Amino acid sequence: MRLTKALAEELLLEAWQNPMNRPWITHCRSVGKTAGVIAEAIGEDADFTEALGMVHDIGKKDTKEVVFHDLLGYEYLTKLGYDEASAAVCLTHSYLNNDDTCVAGGYLPENKFRTDFIRNHHYTECEKIINLCDLMCKDIQMTFEERMIDLITRKGVHPNSAYHLMEAVKLKNYFDSKVPGGIYSLFPDLHLMNGAIRIF
Image (cartoon, rainbow, N blue to C red; front, top):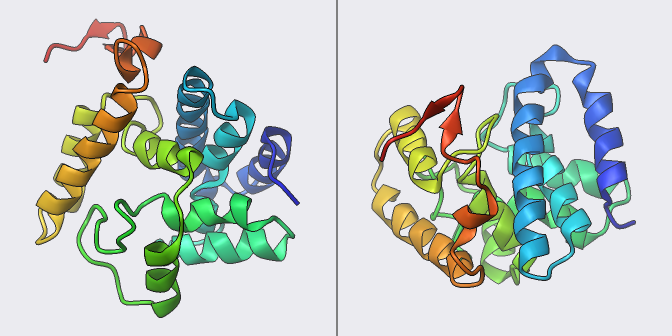
């Protein structure tokens, strides 16, 4: 079964009943909306891409255990009958450059399935868009630069932080090259937060 925006919405509405899920759901909605706009601008399937963004963190459902949320999300969607193209985003969204060590917040506990999957998986354009939008959103859209500062401030600097940052910049540059004026041109209100103009 292939994920759609409507099906993703059903999954989020069910999860919303548990208040502990609401922070990641709000983040996922922000990622999904941002991803849909970028996908449409570069000729990708906007509905499917938005749906992927909406569920990328669903492995956090009903648990405070987030270290393995990528694996939990993949297993959850697979058990519900969603196809590989729909479930893979749960595993791919945090890892850049086909490398499970290229992740924010330091190295994660080793997991052979995760490592093999990430290193052998062909990232689709839709999945790459989710990678980028996860680096542009908390509960609201942010600039890529603000979000990277947020991640480093909250998660600290680790041996792989410079590597992750360099690959993240490459990813943003990749999509900037696909959109006339760069991806920020797609979001005219991006520099507004709580009515105040951000100054860079």
